Image (cartoon, rainbow, N blue to C red):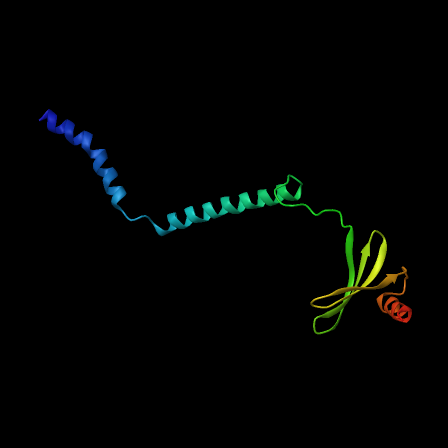
Length: 125
């Protein structure tokens, strides 16, 4: 009699555990676990982004700009006029889908692109 009582007392927690393990997991618990995992992943991505912006070298940093494109104007189709600044010198370029031509050097003026373009066209033969 004592042995059966002892066996029942020992096996009782195992039966309760088996019963709770056999139950279906709740949808709320699964959703909370998923949201927590998503939060951790987004947090890690934000930390990686912040570290890369501070210069830890995860993402390539922007180099000093030796060549700057100041302005671009379409001429129709795949043709463009472009003002480029290289080492404090402005150059007018004519660009098409297969060629890039130097149309002339521009002197810095306060008037703007259209006046510089007109002066460069007058200098062409």
